[in-house]
Length: 60
Image (cartoon, rainbow, N blue to C red):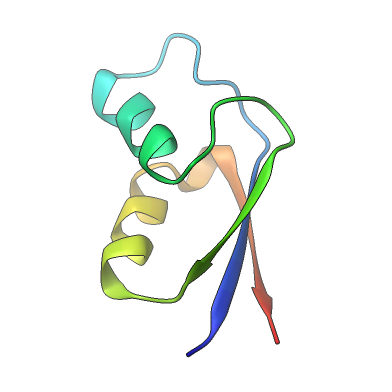
């Protein structure tokens, strides 16, 4: 399966509770931290809700 590298580039301050929980679910809680996830529909849905706070790259 493909992998995605997700990096947080926006602050969760003053965001809705759902957006904050999605960042925590993705393993992100501080600026400029990165995590790798498998490319699944569940992860894509979480990324879609907070896409304005993230940078997403495909990893080979």
